[in-house]
Image 1: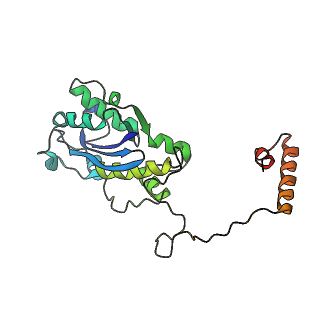
Image 2: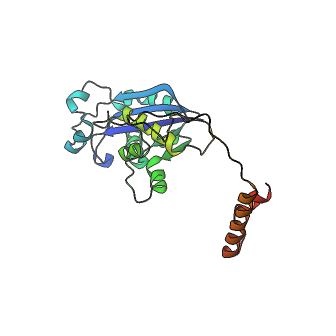
Image 3: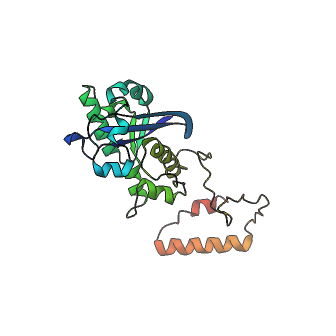
Length: 236
């Protein structure tokens, strides 16, 4: 399965009032593992940058003045994303800008290139209702280092989002170890500690099994139906 993690930076918040994309970054995941393929361009928007947007990403009109316009990189973008599942944090924002750029070039909407769109912001809100679900908040929640993220950057944010997405979906597709090892324990310096290899396995004895059956019977009595563990105990 091929997935593309995508992020953009823009001149402002609304493509309907003339705001444009000024940076786009993509990374590739195949079968839940990052490849070394990336797509990254700074783009000349041929307009000013809103002060609020500049404070977020630090990209000035002067810096972007010698960069290609969107029409000059659109074919490479299409080639990179076509047919993949596309993963975006707050997809409505990025897709609105990308569809607008494609419309200005008289092309069909960008979102039509994707086999599926996955919005990690919507997924995170379902997983963590009532909590902050920005990219920074999710990095903190999954112990993903973002100390080097002093300003927003499309490629850097796409790389961080790839790690967040793998962490959010761990265990949904298979039991293999994926991109990152999220070890629970660590030493005083924050280094992961290996699990011991000589763990002792204790089997339940007769008294343990009888007590287990007693508890299951009490659960069944109070709930007036068999507990979900009953079939397991009957097959032992």
